[in-house]
Length: 237
Image (cartoon, rainbow, N blue to C red; front, side, top):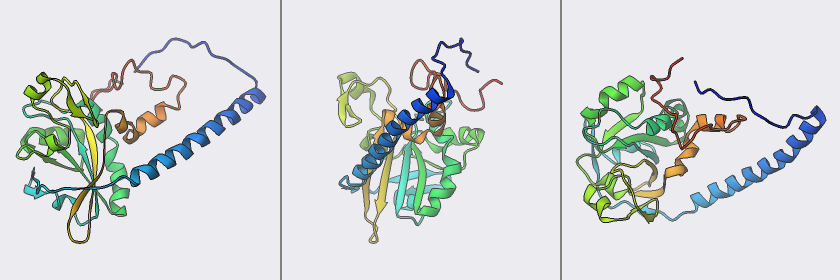
Protein backbone atom coordinates (compact mmCIF):
# COMPACT_ATOMS: atom_id res chain seq x y z
CA UNK A 1 0.00 0.00 0.00
CA UNK A 2 1.14 3.55 -0.70
CA UNK A 3 1.91 5.55 2.46
CA UNK A 4 1.29 9.28 2.57
CA UNK A 5 2.18 12.10 4.91
CA UNK A 6 -0.59 14.16 6.55
CA UNK A 7 -1.87 16.80 4.17
CA UNK A 8 -2.19 20.52 4.75
CA UNK A 9 -5.53 21.43 3.23
CA UNK A 10 -8.23 24.03 3.72
CA UNK A 11 -10.94 22.94 6.18
CA UNK A 12 -14.25 24.84 6.10
CA UNK A 13 -17.75 24.82 7.54
CA UNK A 14 -20.58 22.79 6.00
CA UNK A 15 -22.05 25.92 4.39
CA UNK A 16 -18.74 26.85 2.79
CA UNK A 17 -18.17 23.24 1.68
CA UNK A 18 -21.59 23.13 -0.03
CA UNK A 19 -20.89 26.42 -1.76
CA UNK A 20 -17.56 25.10 -3.08
CA UNK A 21 -19.27 21.88 -4.15
CA UNK A 22 -21.89 23.78 -6.14
CA UNK A 23 -19.16 25.73 -7.93
CA UNK A 24 -17.32 22.52 -8.79
CA UNK A 25 -20.55 20.91 -10.00
CA UNK A 26 -20.86 23.58 -12.68
CA UNK A 27 -17.36 22.74 -13.93
CA UNK A 28 -18.21 19.04 -13.87
CA UNK A 29 -21.32 19.71 -15.96
CA UNK A 30 -19.23 21.68 -18.46
CA UNK A 31 -16.77 18.79 -18.63
CA UNK A 32 -19.58 16.27 -19.21
CA UNK A 33 -20.98 18.34 -22.07
CA UNK A 34 -17.49 18.69 -23.56
CA UNK A 35 -16.96 14.93 -23.27
CA UNK A 36 -20.29 14.30 -25.03
CA UNK A 37 -19.25 16.65 -27.82
CA UNK A 38 -15.90 14.84 -28.14
CA UNK A 39 -17.67 11.48 -28.35
CA UNK A 40 -19.91 12.84 -31.09
CA UNK A 41 -16.85 14.12 -33.00
CA UNK A 42 -15.25 10.69 -32.65
CA UNK A 43 -18.29 9.06 -34.22
CA UNK A 44 -18.11 11.52 -37.13
CA UNK A 45 -14.58 10.48 -38.10
CA UNK A 46 -14.24 9.15 -41.66
CA UNK A 47 -13.71 5.41 -42.03
CA UNK A 48 -10.78 3.63 -43.65
CA UNK A 49 -11.51 0.39 -45.50
CA UNK A 50 -9.27 -2.49 -44.39
CA UNK A 51 -7.91 -3.97 -47.60
CA UNK A 52 -5.59 -6.60 -46.08
CA UNK A 53 -7.03 -10.03 -45.31
CA UNK A 54 -5.36 -10.47 -41.92
CA UNK A 55 -5.17 -13.99 -40.50
CA UNK A 56 -4.25 -14.40 -36.83
CA UNK A 57 -3.04 -17.31 -34.76
CA UNK A 58 -5.66 -18.31 -32.20
CA UNK A 59 -5.50 -21.02 -29.54
CA UNK A 60 -7.62 -23.25 -31.79
CA UNK A 61 -5.92 -22.39 -35.06
CA UNK A 62 -6.00 -19.63 -37.69
CA UNK A 63 -8.72 -16.98 -37.47
CA UNK A 64 -9.39 -14.05 -39.78
CA UNK A 65 -10.11 -10.46 -38.81
CA UNK A 66 -13.66 -11.01 -40.04
CA UNK A 67 -14.00 -14.07 -37.77
CA UNK A 68 -13.05 -11.97 -34.75
CA UNK A 69 -16.33 -10.06 -35.04
CA UNK A 70 -18.01 -13.27 -33.84
CA UNK A 71 -21.27 -12.45 -35.66
CA UNK A 72 -21.35 -8.83 -34.47
CA UNK A 73 -20.96 -5.65 -36.51
CA UNK A 74 -18.49 -3.86 -34.20
CA UNK A 75 -15.08 -5.01 -32.98
CA UNK A 76 -12.73 -3.56 -30.36
CA UNK A 77 -9.09 -4.62 -30.67
CA UNK A 78 -6.81 -3.92 -27.74
CA UNK A 79 -3.19 -3.87 -28.86
CA UNK A 80 -1.47 -5.54 -25.89
CA UNK A 81 2.29 -5.14 -25.49
CA UNK A 82 3.57 -8.71 -25.51
CA UNK A 83 6.57 -9.21 -27.77
CA UNK A 84 8.04 -12.52 -28.91
CA UNK A 85 10.08 -14.17 -26.18
CA UNK A 86 8.76 -12.00 -23.34
CA UNK A 87 8.39 -13.86 -20.02
CA UNK A 88 5.47 -11.68 -18.92
CA UNK A 89 3.09 -9.18 -20.44
CA UNK A 90 3.07 -5.43 -19.91
CA UNK A 91 1.89 -4.35 -16.41
CA UNK A 92 0.20 -1.25 -17.85
CA UNK A 93 -1.66 -3.24 -20.51
CA UNK A 94 -2.63 -5.71 -17.79
CA UNK A 95 -4.02 -2.82 -15.74
CA UNK A 96 -6.22 -1.95 -18.73
CA UNK A 97 -7.24 -5.56 -19.36
CA UNK A 98 -8.23 -6.14 -15.73
CA UNK A 99 -11.24 -3.95 -16.52
CA UNK A 100 -12.46 -5.86 -19.56
CA UNK A 101 -14.28 -9.06 -18.64
CA UNK A 102 -16.94 -7.53 -16.38
CA UNK A 103 -17.74 -4.85 -18.96
CA UNK A 104 -17.57 -7.32 -21.84
CA UNK A 105 -20.65 -9.21 -20.72
CA UNK A 106 -22.59 -6.00 -21.32
CA UNK A 107 -21.16 -4.61 -24.56
CA UNK A 108 -21.06 -8.00 -26.26
CA UNK A 109 -24.85 -8.00 -25.91
CA UNK A 110 -24.81 -4.58 -27.57
CA UNK A 111 -23.32 -5.78 -30.89
CA UNK A 112 -19.68 -5.22 -29.90
CA UNK A 113 -17.01 -7.95 -29.97
CA UNK A 114 -13.69 -7.69 -28.17
CA UNK A 115 -10.28 -9.24 -28.78
CA UNK A 116 -6.73 -8.68 -27.58
CA UNK A 117 -3.96 -8.90 -30.18
CA UNK A 118 -0.24 -9.26 -29.47
CA UNK A 119 2.78 -9.90 -31.68
CA UNK A 120 4.06 -12.79 -29.55
CA UNK A 121 3.02 -16.30 -30.62
CA UNK A 122 -0.03 -17.69 -28.82
CA UNK A 123 2.07 -20.21 -26.91
CA UNK A 124 4.02 -17.36 -25.30
CA UNK A 125 1.05 -15.80 -23.51
CA UNK A 126 -1.41 -18.63 -22.82
CA UNK A 127 -0.04 -19.41 -19.35
CA UNK A 128 0.10 -15.71 -18.50
CA UNK A 129 -3.52 -15.23 -19.53
CA UNK A 130 -4.57 -18.16 -17.34
CA UNK A 131 -2.56 -16.76 -14.44
CA UNK A 132 -4.34 -13.40 -14.78
CA UNK A 133 -7.75 -15.13 -14.86
CA UNK A 134 -8.87 -13.38 -18.04
CA UNK A 135 -11.53 -14.94 -20.30
CA UNK A 136 -11.53 -12.55 -23.27
CA UNK A 137 -10.26 -13.72 -26.64
CA UNK A 138 -6.51 -13.23 -27.24
CA UNK A 139 -4.83 -13.92 -30.57
CA UNK A 140 -1.40 -13.46 -32.12
CA UNK A 141 -0.36 -11.33 -35.10
CA UNK A 142 3.06 -13.02 -35.28
CA UNK A 143 2.41 -14.23 -38.84
CA UNK A 144 1.06 -10.99 -40.31
CA UNK A 145 1.76 -7.24 -40.47
CA UNK A 146 -1.22 -6.15 -38.36
CA UNK A 147 0.76 -4.66 -35.46
CA UNK A 148 3.05 -2.75 -37.80
CA UNK A 149 0.18 -1.50 -39.95
CA UNK A 150 -1.71 -0.19 -36.92
CA UNK A 151 1.20 1.61 -35.33
CA UNK A 152 1.80 -0.53 -32.24
CA UNK A 153 4.92 -2.48 -33.25
CA UNK A 154 8.12 -1.15 -34.78
CA UNK A 155 11.24 -2.75 -36.16
CA UNK A 156 14.40 -1.93 -34.23
CA UNK A 157 16.18 -0.61 -37.31
CA UNK A 158 13.35 1.86 -37.90
CA UNK A 159 13.44 3.07 -34.29
CA UNK A 160 17.22 3.50 -34.45
CA UNK A 161 16.96 5.47 -37.70
CA UNK A 162 14.92 8.28 -36.12
CA UNK A 163 11.31 9.32 -35.47
CA UNK A 164 8.54 6.96 -36.51
CA UNK A 165 4.84 7.63 -37.00
CA UNK A 166 3.07 6.91 -33.72
CA UNK A 167 -0.16 8.34 -32.34
CA UNK A 168 -0.65 10.24 -35.62
CA UNK A 169 2.64 12.18 -35.39
CA UNK A 170 6.35 11.43 -35.94
CA UNK A 171 8.10 10.82 -32.64
CA UNK A 172 11.15 9.13 -31.16
CA UNK A 173 10.33 5.81 -29.47
CA UNK A 174 12.51 3.40 -27.53
CA UNK A 175 10.34 0.29 -27.32
CA UNK A 176 9.43 -1.91 -30.28
CA UNK A 177 6.01 -2.56 -28.71
CA UNK A 178 3.41 0.11 -27.89
CA UNK A 179 -0.15 -0.10 -26.51
CA UNK A 180 -3.26 1.05 -28.30
CA UNK A 181 -6.87 0.37 -29.16
CA UNK A 182 -8.58 0.20 -32.55
CA UNK A 183 -12.26 -0.01 -33.45
CA UNK A 184 -13.65 -1.70 -36.55
CA UNK A 185 -17.06 -1.99 -38.21
CA UNK A 186 -18.21 -4.73 -40.61
CA UNK A 187 -21.08 -3.93 -42.94
CA UNK A 188 -23.71 -6.25 -44.41
CA UNK A 189 -21.55 -7.27 -47.38
CA UNK A 190 -18.61 -8.19 -45.13
CA UNK A 191 -16.44 -5.14 -45.79
CA UNK A 192 -14.42 -4.06 -42.75
CA UNK A 193 -13.60 -0.47 -41.85
CA UNK A 194 -11.26 1.05 -39.30
CA UNK A 195 -13.28 3.74 -37.54
CA UNK A 196 -11.04 4.81 -34.64
CA UNK A 197 -7.66 4.25 -32.98
CA UNK A 198 -6.16 5.68 -29.81
CA UNK A 199 -2.80 5.43 -28.08
CA UNK A 200 -0.86 6.76 -25.09
CA UNK A 201 -3.13 8.67 -22.68
CA UNK A 202 -6.11 8.11 -24.94
CA UNK A 203 -6.25 4.73 -23.19
CA UNK A 204 -7.00 6.38 -19.81
CA UNK A 205 -10.67 6.20 -20.73
CA UNK A 206 -10.51 2.40 -20.45
CA UNK A 207 -9.17 2.36 -16.88
CA UNK A 208 -12.01 2.41 -14.37
CA UNK A 209 -9.61 2.34 -11.41
CA UNK A 210 -8.21 5.68 -12.52
CA UNK A 211 -11.69 7.19 -12.45
CA UNK A 212 -12.04 6.13 -8.82
CA UNK A 213 -8.58 7.43 -7.93
CA UNK A 214 -9.32 10.76 -9.60
CA UNK A 215 -12.04 11.26 -6.96
CA UNK A 216 -9.53 10.90 -4.13
CA UNK A 217 -7.87 13.84 -2.33
CA UNK A 218 -4.48 12.69 -3.63
CA UNK A 219 -5.77 11.82 -7.08
CA UNK A 220 -3.73 9.12 -8.77
CA UNK A 221 -0.83 9.68 -6.35
CA UNK A 222 1.79 8.58 -8.87
CA UNK A 223 5.14 9.98 -9.90
CA UNK A 224 4.59 8.96 -13.52
CA UNK A 225 1.87 7.22 -15.51
CA UNK A 226 1.24 3.81 -13.91
CA UNK A 227 4.60 3.85 -12.09
CA UNK A 228 2.97 2.14 -9.09
CA UNK A 229 0.97 -0.45 -11.06
CA UNK A 230 1.82 -4.15 -10.69
CA UNK A 231 0.21 -7.34 -11.92
CA UNK A 232 -2.89 -7.81 -9.76
CA UNK A 233 -1.47 -10.99 -8.20
CA UNK A 234 1.69 -9.19 -7.06
CA UNK A 235 0.22 -6.58 -4.73
CA UNK A 236 1.05 -7.10 -1.07
CA UNK A 237 -1.68 -6.82 1.56
